[in-house]
Image (tube, rainbow, N blue to C red; front, top):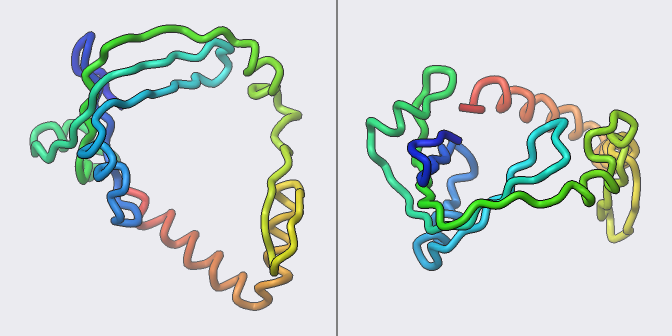
Length: 148
């Protein structure tokens, strides 16, 4: 995200699933709300505004990552900005190191499990068998070579 001026934000779009769902939603309903969590900060910043999508080459180049320009950019014209108290962040222990093992709800083979992320991964690997290793290799390669 880049602040273009005091009332305008630019959010880069990176290569992804190419479904453009967010862009379709913005075209139909330009009113947006953004919530910004800053690691280590309890208070949350909330922004409301109106958005549109642009393919302006100069702006996309300015939003480059790893030397690759953004695919598209969402521009948000800010209507209001306000802080949200940190009570929910404190209660959730969001920035505490020991809260990283939060439960992860997954559905596997019709069964519902509430497991830690590690347990979920192990259960999924068990269900997928040898395919799990192949999937991990494909995903790791994608993160390495296709992230931006």
